[in-house]
Length: 418
Image 1 (cartoon, rainbow, N blue to C red):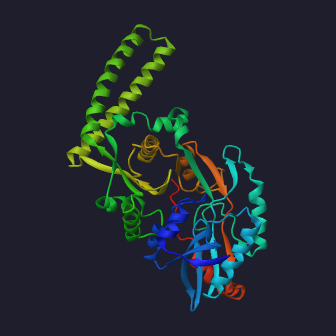
Image 2: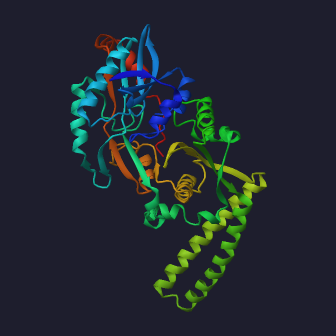
């Protein structure tokens, strides 16, 4: 068994067929991170002439003459094979010790539990519990539990099974928010590089990333036909036309209700219908006034939300999304429903909503974020978390005591709490 560095093409060929395949373990992600201070290294583990494992390792200096590695979503190996896990770990440690590495960080996409958010119960995968114990014995240091967003990638991921998704199964709250979504002049439009500035304005306060980061993200993956940039757009003229038609119909209904109520003022059911009809008419009238104001001010169309998507095999990944928080049109809810409908029709199998917290209480500062994503009835998977494979214990301890590790990995992101 031996380690060799391989080409991007060789790596992508192997990685794209591995059971743990994901878009982080691709040369496209490696080339993205190359632009932000990392050096991608593509390794393969050979037994005779056969590749039995591989990994993208992102290398970076953390101190003078001291490097660390990061293998996003972990090595592509058979973690359940004790022999391979042990021997491959030894090989990696020896190989990267000679290269001056202190440690390699991994966060494998291996499910520890499926979580029921409603009662906070977990269906634990016992094999994963055993695996975590084996990793620690092999000198993989288990890091924070990551109940919130302490690590580089989320530990709790909500994933929608697209082919079994049914909008009729959504809760009353979200159904109200997306009610008449197709009558509001709102359309989901596939954008391009010219929409990136508008997209950035909607997401810039969510993470500590520059616009150049997202421009490179989109460019690199788009060249491989793996990226979609979506914008949710409202056409106020179309919206006004539909609202006026609805107002006319509601006005006719309201007149009938009022006539019936005048004939029988003591009828509680008629009173209830009259009050509800009056309320809806007043809301719609206010809505029409606001739309007219937009048009009078020369705003005929407006982007209300946007999302950057990565497509990998049969899985859709939402990298980040944002929306105009000052509109009453619930654009984020509408955009997600439209995204789900689009990719379901395209034949994709899963939509990864990209992270929630493991705290499902009302006291959670990210409660709004959790609730928004849980509205779509995803399956919630808790992964085994983040580990540092210690390559050089002396260097690792030095980085720890001098707080260089903390400075490098403490999260500075501003997560949108909805």
